[in-house]
Each structure stands twice: as C-alpha cells, then as structure tokens.
Length: 216
Ligand code: AMP
Image 1 (tube, rainbow, N blue to C red):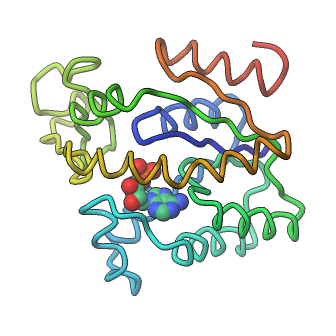
Image 2 (cartoon, rainbow, N blue to C red; image 1 turned 135 degrees about the vertical axis):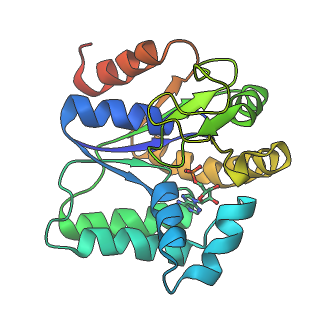
C-alpha cells in the first residue's frame, strides 16, 4: 500500500500515519520529522533549515524533493509507505509523481484530513512534546500526570517553536494557499478521499481503513 496524507498542521496526520504503519506495515515518511532531524544534525542544508524549524516557513520545493529523493534513491527504498506532510505543493506533487512513476511506486490513495482552522489553533497551541522520547501531550486533551513533565521518562516537556499561535496562523495560511491545487490534482486523477478529522482518533482511523480496504 502506498499512501499520501494531506491535511493542515494539527489535523492528526502524524498520529494517523503511525496507526497505519502498525496496521499495514508501511514505512512512515514525515517530511517535518526529516527536516527537524536534518536541522538537529546540523548538516550542510543548515542555513535553509533554520527559518523552517523556528518560524514555520515552508522549506523550498527543491530542498524537500532532494531529501525525499535521497530516501528513494537508497537500495532499501520504501515499497509500501505513508507520506505525512509531503507533497505539500503542486510542484512537489508533480516532481514526486514523476519520480515514483519512474520507480513503479506511485501513490495509490491520497487521504485529506479536514479540520476547522480554529480547532487547529486550539490543538497546536496546547501541544507539548517530550524532547527525549517524542511523546506528544495536550494541555486539555491528554495532559501528562505531572504538569510539564513526560510520564515515560520524566523529561521536561517543550513547545515546538512553530506551535506558537502567530506561527500556527501563518502555517495555516500557507496550507490553504498551497493545498488547493495539490488537492485538485489528486481529485482529478481519482486518488483523493476527504475525511473529517474530528472526534475519536480510533474512529478517524477506522474511516481511513474502510476507505483503503473496503472494510473496517
Ligand atoms: P510538520 O511537522 O509536518 O508540521 O512540518 C513542520 C514544518 O516543516 C512545516 O511547518 C514546514 O515549515 C516544514 N515542512 C514539512 N514538510 C514540508 C514540505 N513538504 N514542504 C515544505 N515545507 C515542509
């Protein structure tokens, strides 16, 4: 199975991707994670990465295509995958579809997770992450047992710099500007399925699975 998840920040792409990985044995490719990881390792693309990580500025199409391209250039390139946060622009989609068609690994379904903007702001501005194990908490929805500290390893939780409200709003504007043409492309070729990403995480997962397999 080869799958693309599209959705605004905070729509649960990462969470749903992880559940799909467990259910179908897919490789999870999250470009946000790849970019944060590249930034932490301080590689040669460093300068281009700083505004992306700190201010939520979109990485250039060339940079993300390059990083995704490297992943698919390796000998153990993913056969079954779920892409989370990529492609995010029409140019990325055109590049990716062409590259995947060369490799015989075109996406088979594109799932768009839909959430209202105000709900996105609520979700992300209350989100805190453990810098050690990556576990994600939410001040209202799933708080840690001890405020500010990870249940699993006791590390002090942090807020991602791009989860500040003004940054979230600018990320949302970028999402809307870029997604329209991307979604239109996948609607036109029959791959797109729109799923409301509200309510129980398990219920949303079940809707995606039903769409992908025809059964829940
Ligand atoms: P995410 O973890 O998916 O919210 O991504 C974090 C940040 O990385 C985003 O706000 C963007 O600045 C950047 N980013 C992630 N994926 C892409 C992409 N496909 N194209 C451009 N920028 C991206």
